[in-house]
Image 1 (cartoon, rainbow over the protein chains, first blue to last red):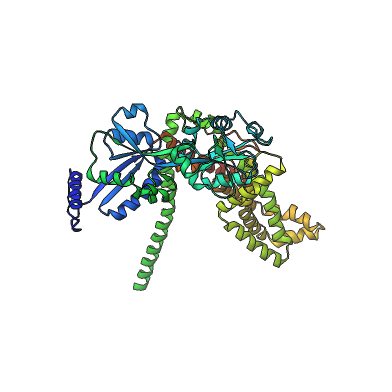
Image 2: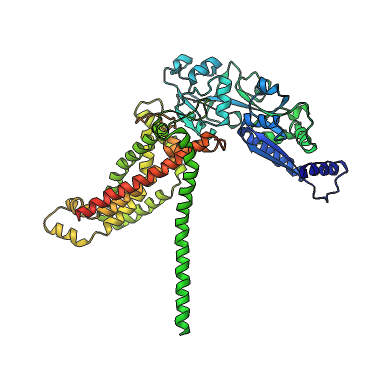
Length: 272
Length: 295
């Protein structure tokens, strides 16, 4: 009840050119993917700076739980780092992609391989191929570097390459920096990192002939990426403050905040 | 009369303050132990002690997850033993040299440097290990990758050197000069004296140094995480392995709260805690017990 009043008060305040006196405040609850924690954190910071009366809360539970919470009305917006499954969409949910995270394969600069197709990548990471000569490189063993269980980059990569829980990693590391350092110092290594964290000193591979760039990740021609989605009920209107926040995060105004989280905004500034 | 009374009160106040401070430490131990038990037991309960401790497959995020930590247990045990095996002889000989043979100036400089070594953060050991040691190991042993149990042993051995050296030097310094003089007077060589008289006399201090080294090596997470490879394999010297500590540290940040995965990580922490206590108690009993029997 109190929250409903707060929403109304906030809406009224917003409506009448803000007298900036009433104690009215509102909150928007989000729930879902732990890998969106950083994005939603940056969005929250930027939004709350402009709308001091609104509090954004985030409950990191995981994509599946976030979607369920949105369907059951336990939160205003669900956050999901995977597309809706058919069963979920049938519950009257709709999703809007706010950002893309390209996942980039990196190798040592001396490695002659520069292009892999998804099938080769799958075989490589599941251990079916274990020598670079089988993938067009020099005859030396392949050293797989990846992230720890639970990492969003790992699940995004495994989802996109069809290697879910089947990767036979030689090195399992806990940060992009460690993966880059491993690949940089081992000519046999291959690893995956989020596109935003690639640094000099490693060679970025093409996947199916496409180099990962902002454009190729956004238009989907680069295949290994995951989408950061906001999920809400299609038939029910959001509360006013939630609608305002939703409008903000799906607009080009949010692109700077999204970029500061190291991912690619779905709505770019140029298209403003 | 009044001064005596004031003195008594001050005495009492001081003693209660010291008591309280002592209790704070005890309290921390209790809180941590109880918390670990509460957080760690449920998962073991639902997985079962035997499958948890002796299961060899760790796939916490799979649809049909399995939680077996036997490879981590073995790795921690072997890794620590390896580190001590490399670190103790080097540290002990270094301590014997510094305490008995080195000129004063050399000893002063060396002790300063050893203190610096003790102060280097473990992440720096890990980073240097990753960027220097791993490629070197790969090259030296013609391996595809240097990240291995061996690399972790080397890094841990270097990390435990300062505490072993410092404690051993103190122990050797405390050996009465008369023992050695008597040995020398009987015609023993200085090196002979050192190995036959000084080191045995400093045995209990050296034992403490070893216990300290074991404690540090088995509890280290950061440096090991960067050089051991962290694949949940059964331990092999040049294979990628995961320690108990790194199993907890590497997955804790992403394991969603309330899930079995997270609870199982707490269970690993509990096992690590028990494991360390057991090893320390065992070493203390073994090393001290032997000394008392010898004396």
